[in-house]
Amino acid sequence: MGRDGTVDEDKRATLRRFAALGAASPFARFGEDSGDSDSDAPGAIAGYVSAHPGTHFSKLRDDLKLGTGETQHHLHRLESENVVASRKDGDYRRYFPAGQFSETEQVILGFLRRETARGMLVTLLRNPAVSAAELADELDVSRPTVSNYAGDLEAAGLLSRADGYAITNPETVLTLLIRYADSFGDDAAALAGEADSLVRYDPA
Image (tube, rainbow, N blue to C red; front, side, top):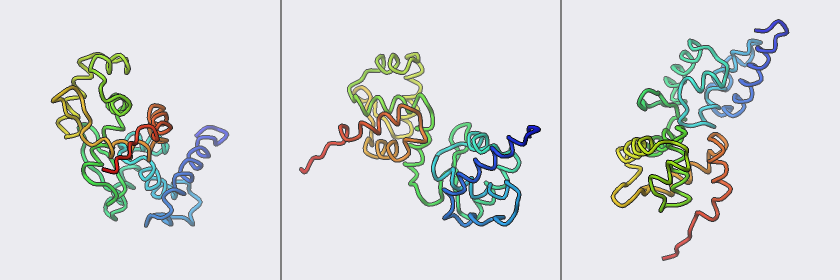
């Protein structure tokens, strides 16, 4: 904490902001009568996970300005009370509101939390005919990087490489991107603004 107390006040404001989002969770009132800003931590974690489904541990910890031990403690308790759920995703453990997302949606959200994978999906939603070389240029990454992520997306059942690149479930990907656009990068926010032009109604 700084001598003027600004770090504690920043932490308190951050926790309370996200605790408001988690007000409906069983932990919303946990420690509410305490003057300690950490009493807001369980509700803040629940609120953060609700607003950022698929977030991983260190991102949640850092954004909420919590310590590693206290984050682990509260997450363990929230999981035991079925407020949040988690799944392993490579080197990460990702967190979701319990019972809210299917396994496929959890997988999609995990990829949308990765900048390059999200960029590929956003670009493919805008232009399904884009090539691997064009994806690499658009995202300013190498062709092997695009190929590696494409392989991961294909293995997860989210991408077909049978004839170019094609998202296998574009409606679900687009829905999740739009619903949580504010929690992703600028690319998702821009795509959300174009959603009307991307959704095609086919009465047949």
